Image (cartoon, rainbow, N blue to C red; front, side, top):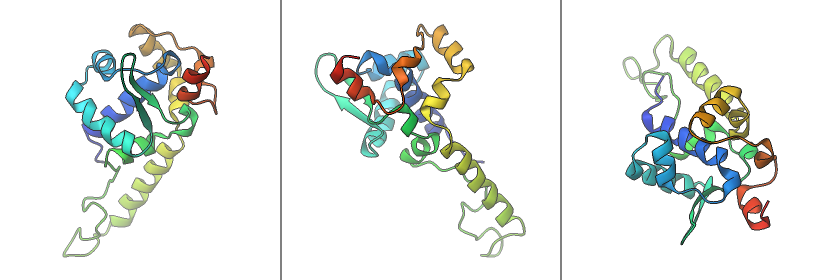
Length: 165
């Protein structure tokens, strides 16, 4: 299975945004500090996340990034795909040229596994992750208390900020 650091860091960084969504725009410097990810690397990832409309940026003092949609509307698979990653377990990258320019004996097995992994990750939203006790425990260790009302399905962080909720 090929899931590189790029995909893992993108999921970690956007999950950090979801955890802190109730406090307005979040700077990448804050995310970098909390998650131990290089700021320049985060800037590259967030440019891709913004192009896919998963995050939006707010300029000026107090600016930063926010989720473009509610945490319940963004799947882990979307985040991974947004940074040009895929979860592919085939040796050939899905090209079906594993052996003598054709599929190998197990190509369809690995392709089906890739599909199942993608399906699984598509069924997990950022909201689902935020609500996991293990994620909340780590977030608390990073100095953040998760308030479930910050993550009401259907209300985007941008709405919350605009309405001062």
